[in-house]
Length: 295
Ligand code: ZN
Image (cartoon, rainbow, N blue to C red; front, side):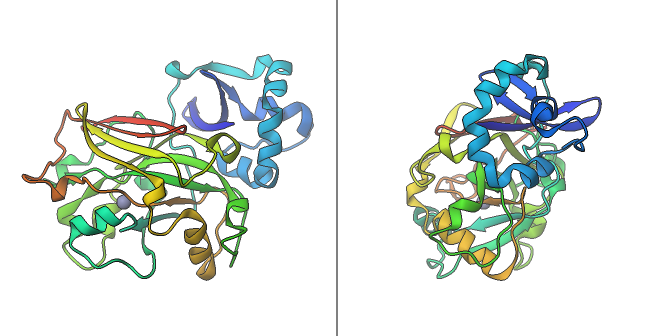
């Protein structure tokens, strides 16, 4: 099942993508939730309610769609998609999580995950323009797999960790390198308003298969600049969730982006900085693609 947030009348609405059609989640689920149930209204609320039974819902979705054709909102190409979760309470980002990327930065291998944060205000949709080039002359790309949490958890084991994942999406951890390296904390270069494309959908784990076996590629103006596989992550998803949930509670709609492989613009000779008009794409096998223009 593929979950999206789409825009309608100036509001983000939770939707379910079936083939190329978007269905309104509230309308689709109305019959089974009852007309008296409060509207879900957002992807975060949908995950709050359906997180524990998401795989069951995924198995029923074709039958639901067949029985509720009026819930169809439109074709994917005619709708504006936001980040799949538009109001995540936490956006946690892992730095230095691929061996070849650690090597290109000249740093030592981390003994524990390196973690920084973005905010919901950093996130944009899968086709939105990246509008932060005016505040930096060192705008860089980082193609990444991101995990969306489906159930609250605290201090979970690696063994159980995937039970708390709603699904997988794609994230471009766009970075203003000059701002990142002004101090020891990376946040100013990472949490720039409206900088970070995410989406297009949260793909549930029954469709993704093994999250540690997905090909990931980044292209700038059609040229491949990053190409790796999630099997090369130093700290796999199970370890990240166990590690993070040891010190904080993860909640439905929280995002963990899992780090980028080798090939970032800053470490190329000469460096490859994104400039207005550039097109940057990130594709994650079986999950989807981002395509954004730098404005
Ligand atoms: Zn990153």
